[in-house]
Length: 471
Image 1 (cartoon, rainbow, N blue to C red):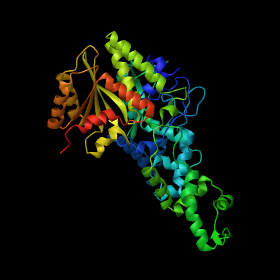
Image 2 (cartoon, helix red, strand yellow):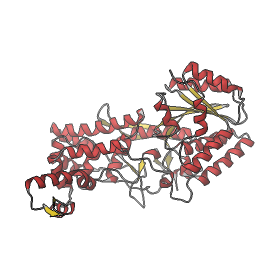
Image 3 (tube, rainbow, N blue to C red):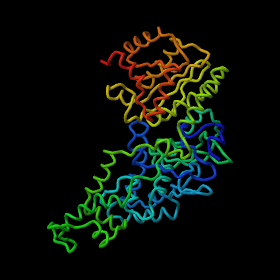
Image 4 (cartoon, rainbow, N blue to C red):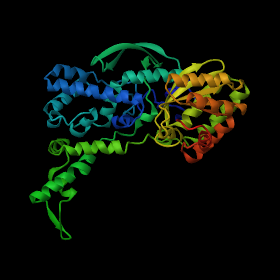
């Protein structure tokens, strides 16, 4: 049983901002620190700071011979069944660092030349040099370190999708301010007496990017080849009149164990920097809808169904379901440019919420090109039986100002064209770009997204071009 089924949130993965996890086993997705570092939002930056401060505390403890403290920090990285991610195929059971593994990791770090030299600066670096550390252990550890952030995300998502939560006590979370683990109480969804913590699907990966074998082949071996050629090593051969050292001969002679790779890292420290810089230049892309949902047609069929539900809710003036379906449609067509919807206002006439903007191309990316503040995008949805008015527009404007955003989208069934001039005047006077989007325009956006899989939204770009430019 999936989270959506257990908590009455109907739909396919495309309609959910979170990973729709199974509740009796684990889903084979992972949290990759490299992908987290690629986030542009302030929220993403906070995640990175938390991860780096945690690992820095461990390394400082080892350096200062505070081994009990280091052991305490590591041993608290116990797997939590609340996330339901990883390799398990039966009953959920993660693989984060338990007591015995923590002892092994501590011993490895304490004796590591790479750690002593300061080369290992991030948690994921351990996947390159320490045996037994891979996608599952790194991912589970990241989940635990970032648990407080993910708990907050879960509560916000439950509010957004109208999912009931309960108070859960004794949840252990990492606090980077105090540098300690603390037990606290939180509002979370509960299934069969166990709390559930959701993960944004924009963070999901099929494996972590760090690979000791790729580091070795692409960055360390080229340095070894230069050294062998300069020293006249026995591995040097003449091929087609040119002296060379082959990659295969190096692997056959020295192998490719993590222990040997660590020795070479200390010898060629720039190789690790080059490897990590390669991810900054080409950050891993979020998974596509088809990678998140392996079932037939993960986008077109679910969107058609959502449109039918929207029509039905509108005709029956079923405001609750109308708003919920509208949210699902927007989550579907805005991913991965926009994520983390957070409810702001939910009254009898209008639902207002925000998205974080992580776009790398398309309509929502264009704002950054013009230096328009768009880290958060304000969304307003007007109920079907209510005609759009200046009050709704002003509500969107106020919320945009609160979040220091200059972009707001207002969705409704229809509106008086005379409001377009009002919106343009507001954009000029207030410096907030407001877009009025009726049902016809929404359908154009859905059609474009369904056919191209992109988020250019030419109809909105056309509107944007008619607005006064930012001074």
